[in-house]
Length: 131
Image (tube, rainbow, N blue to C red):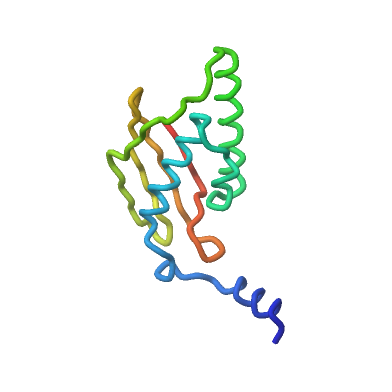
């Protein structure tokens, strides 16, 4: 069997939720990254592999909106901002995970809520909201 055939048959298998890693580290990292993206410190492409297409497009739309507002107000993205996670909760619902993270910066706090679903052998965010 060729390498390509082995690889494609591996992709075709359905991953069981029990075979996926613990979602909490992903929730933590993704929450921090998305907050940095909205602050203008990180590029959205860096989290694209962890988001489904609709969620990624929604994030891009929000990033463009924030950039326009920042340009209108003539503000520059912050440099060296300190962030910390105050709370992280994950709840399994069927084969999905719904999570919320509270992130604080010196200026304010934010809540990041997301839904993770198993896709292609890993967790992917199918919904993401930052308040």
